[in-house]
Amino acid sequence: MPELPDVEIARRDLERWAVGATIVAAQCGDRYLLRPGSPRAFTRALVGKKVDAIERKGKWLRLALNDGGRLFSHLGMTGDWVSRPIGAPPQRSERARLDVARGRRLSSVRYLDPRRFGRLIAARRDIPEWTALGPDPLSDGIDLTALSPALAVRRRAVKELLMDQAILAGVGNILATEALWMARVDPRVPGSALRPSDVRAIVRGLRRAIARELADRGPRGGGGEGESAFFVYGRRGQPCPRCGTALSSVTLGGRTSVFCPHCQARRR
Ligand SMILES: [Zn+2]
Image (tube, protein in one colour):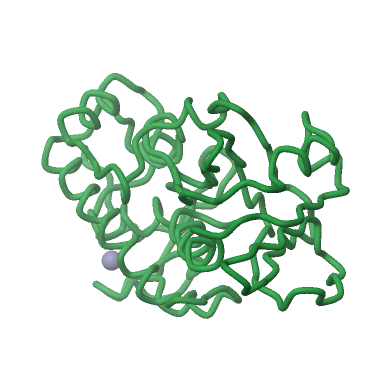
């Protein structure tokens, strides 16, 4: 599932392809992706508008249009934006098309989504899914004075808290797993039991995990080639890169969490 770094790569791509350009054609026939909107409303909201900015918060993208309108895009499980020559025939998993013009140069930006868990919402104002998000670790930074109390009052496992989009936007299973390993914190520890030094270490871990993934994926990543860069994610049973102990796993909030039983031992 795309996490913050994947969506940030998509944002940078879209910025290159669409910012400053005018949308000359817009089409999406998939009512499920558009819900609660419609294909007609999608086209009407976008055609003739200039794209002023592409912003990201957590796993959501927001295309800001010059008339104040916005297009929100969530990649779901398998969504991706790609650039194609104008008039290129649609691919099998193509769900939406934006033809854009910069001066006389035309190109086509397509939204692909084989499994259709993504969303495309054209709106006049910010949608609740966007406004409910907590700060984004990359674009907003992580404010320790806000994060520490948010974690300290909760009895849920720290791993689940980190993945709560209202606490931090964009952190998913991969980033949380990697950051907790870097911080040497057991993923099952309740938020209320964290020491200030744990929270600082987790924040450092998140920053480092995000930077590593962004560097790894490069300007046009995808395809999971970054997976080799993970310290512990997806490596249950393999030796811990730090101490050599076999990595273990636990299910928290329905997601598998890999950790080192030695380095991330729970304190008594
Ligand atoms: Zn270890």
